[in-house]
Image (cartoon, rainbow, N blue to C red; front, side, top):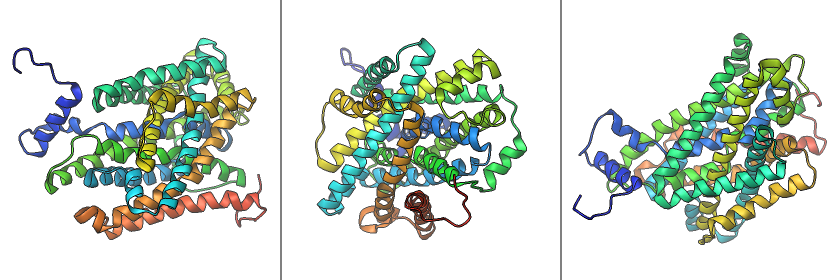
Length: 436
């Protein structure tokens, strides 16, 4: 560096190093870490407070029997996050921008509206999770905890001004904190591993209420805003200048997706396992995060309860940051304009404050926000399947038959699980399911 020249920012140094790897001027095992980031950021959507609420209900009420839903949702998530990342790498467009370029404007505005509703439902889960953690850990009023969560979120978002790398490292640290918390929790409970294995690989649904919880797990795991976001995260990094460079980026991206979402899936399964081991026998009526915290203290000790709250707080703050990033990307992609981050943060916070001010139970709000997300999910999934199979958009990177079939099957699973609760609401009996 020449004398007096300003030092390069971390993001710029990372982008230069990535370009050196793509052009063959840098090699080595550690160079692969340069490509880590987008999937790690997107993975926080799979460990947000909505997951805490639905996984708590699943484990406490149904034991290990719904672990297969978590596994299936995570496999579907891996596929669609990989497709989203590939779209951003190959086209240098995010999913929302691609929708605006290739779909009729009435469809674009409808998808934008659905996405904004999903963003609000997401924020309900994120802010309530962070607020619950703060209120229990520091004895704050719930509304006060929401204000603190909003301030901390905004402070972290300011790191975006320094480029992509600082925010990736911050979110990565919070993801690691959540994972460590649940690793510790598993050592504090007595797990029936045989029953857990059976619940993971043998699908069962005991009732229509179990189906509602399963739909909530699905909505909490495969997230609409994460599908939009991942394409933008890969788009905003170092663009490849050649087909071979894009091929390398896709390959590195796929590996990162597998690693990051495997970790997220294991954390989700650990949530269900912990809730099942701690609450299913003797405390199966526990469905509220606050009650779970107060019950953990006499069952497993104050340490277990504190670890639970720390993980909830980390999830609430980090997912709130990621949700704001996704909301900005979705708005700019669909309608072509941005609003200041602070204004976006305030607007999406309003529904969460309304929920609390109206006296709605916080955990119920978390669970039902995830069901809302499951209904918003098919739109980006269907769009992603359509775009990534088109050669005029993806060129040689268009999906092959096997990937197409898997993506269509995954979308069909989502549509079916979405449709069944709606049919039950209108009194249609589903064969094989008992009433709640």
